[in-house]
Length: 211
Ligand code: OGA
Ligand code: MN
Image 1 (tube, rainbow, N blue to C red):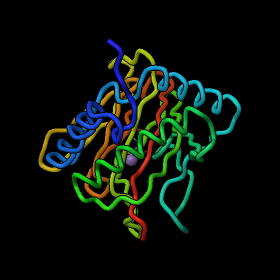
Image 2 (image 1 turned 180 degrees about the horizontal axis):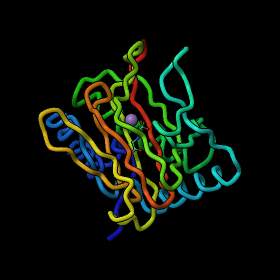
Image 3 (image 1 turned 180 degrees about the vertical axis):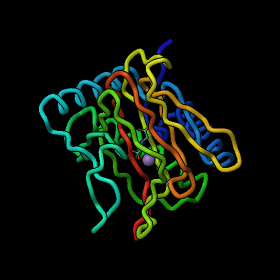
Image 4 (image 1 turned 30 degrees about the vertical axis):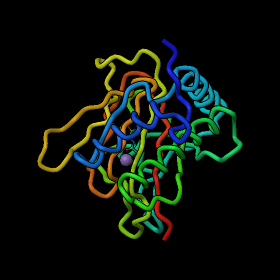
């Protein structure tokens, strides 16, 4: 079967899929979806991320903001590069998909999301990101966090789960399987990235409200 992955606003089946994601987010505060990205796009984004890492274009991510901003690899060990529109065909396709999801989130949940920011993230083996929330104390613009994974043939025994800690519920481990998407409410969801025994590639992003 050939599956269509065109943006939701011009594809009824895609729209229905996005609605399921949005309904689950509304009900539980998080949602996950396998095969969110088409395989050829996952592959192109993975190749781009790998090439950027090999070229030394990714930089060790910082924790906190303002004066507290610092490199603390034991707290956060990923290397990142922020996406710019026009950076590549693959990135533009990804951004178009996220734009379609933004429209559905606003239409269904009235979230008033204005924009999307996203970066490649590369965790070398052993790197992790300790428990945190994605919203900064001095900035409430991030509303929904989204992670899309780019790893071919990921096995649970390789580690690297995104571990969600939903309030009053069991923890939930989401493995970074290529094409899979996880999203959650940035302000509420405590979460962490567990170390893996292989490189772990993703695109992490946030739907934001303008101040
Ligand atoms: C983050 C984050 C989760 C993941 O970058 O803030 O929590 O699974 N990422 O990569
Ligand atoms: Mn996070």
